[in-house]
Image (cartoon, rainbow, N blue to C red; front, side):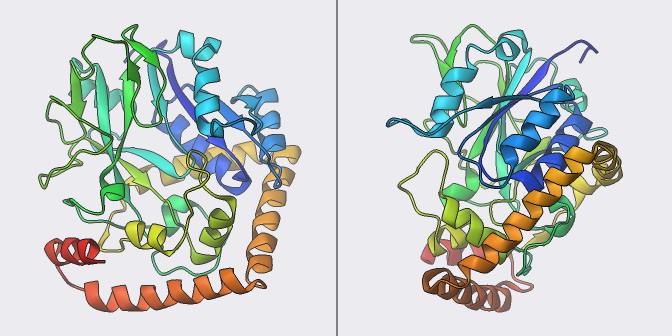
Length: 344
């Protein structure tokens, strides 16, 4: 990886102000050079914080208002295709603010991943679901430090837990950006030169999952903190999904993702660097104010939701599941966990 190589991360945000600085600092630490961020319909100051970060040259931020039939995520990706940063990028990653690209080889940097497979045209990077770790209330602490309990190494079900995202060379054979993988032009090979996060070549994938019981994360994984604490999850459920607005975030969503089976703290090798970068950015009074404003909004939102009957009952069901799962899975192996996940 040369010093002038451009690695672009594209994402869509709504009401994510408390998490932006950590996510940016982490991905900057591992080697992402450019961030193209679209936001829509924000109530917590996410858009204002991104504007300030853009003023300081840290990100590129564009408004992406919700309108028409297309979801905001697909609208953003269609717009991003023609952005100058996309045209200038050598490599592209489409990711969300609750996903942290975690590299296990070398010093945990993107350069180390490229050095491990310099011939790769792209990388299929599996999600690894990180559960709630039994944390109930939302707190303004780093995600990577709070949530360290994760799904087992090998899983086949639920299928949401074995999806992937892609890091790939900006190649003319791709006609469009995609949420999980780029769209290939008709008649051109999709997976030629691609490598899985386990290190094996990718021959063919019919959809956005990589079903295997072999080790998944030899080279890299995508830490997916889809839940956070119970309090944070209630706020996320009220917001809904960016690419499936009619698909509810509910107890089934929680169960499919809340795996607290094994400790995985490897990402914490970067914690001190991330902490230092966030502290540096927060020396800017406006950034610090907007971050605190976002934290305050989320805490108030979580409290207000608990005054409503449906979110309150949902929270009590989460608590019941936490107790039940912890008692069932404690000191059990992955095969039982896989069986139970399939059975429910």
